[in-house]
Length: 171
Image 1 (cartoon, rainbow, N blue to C red):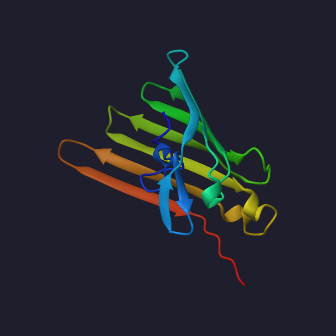
Image 2: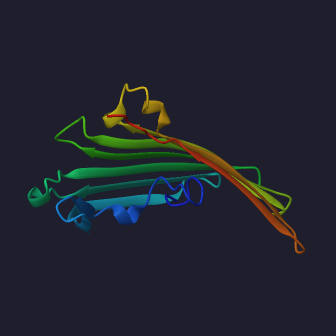
C-alpha cells in the first residue's frame, strides 16, 4: 500500500529507513530505537483502500538526534475495472521543534486497458521542507513522471519519463 508510489527510481517512501539514523561523526547509518509503531491498512469498500502508518523513533543524544515521528497516509480508489487513482501524504517531524519537518504529498494514476495490453502510470509528488521554505528554490522539490507499456505475446515495449527537481545553492 505504501511502497509503490512514484516511478521505479523515485519512490517517495521507503519504510526500512525508519529506525536508521545518520551519524555525522562516522559518516554511517546506525540503528535508532523505535518507541512504538502502528500500521492499519485494508479495503474500506470494493473500490476504496486506505493505509495509515505511524512510528515514533527515540532520541539519541550521542549523535544529537531528536525523537522523530513518522506518519504515512495513503488512499486508493479503483477506476474502471483495472485502473486506480491514489493519494499519499508523508510526514517526518520532530514535535519538539516545529520547524524540523520533511513532508511529501502526491498523487498517482495507474492505468490498465485492454486486458494488460496498455499499462502505465502518471504521478506528481511535491516535497515540503522547512529548510527551503519561501526560498526561490522551494519549488524545485518535486518529482513527476509517467510510463507507458505495450504488452502482447509477441512484443513488449516500455517508455519511462521521470523528472526530479534539484536544489542548487550558491555560496
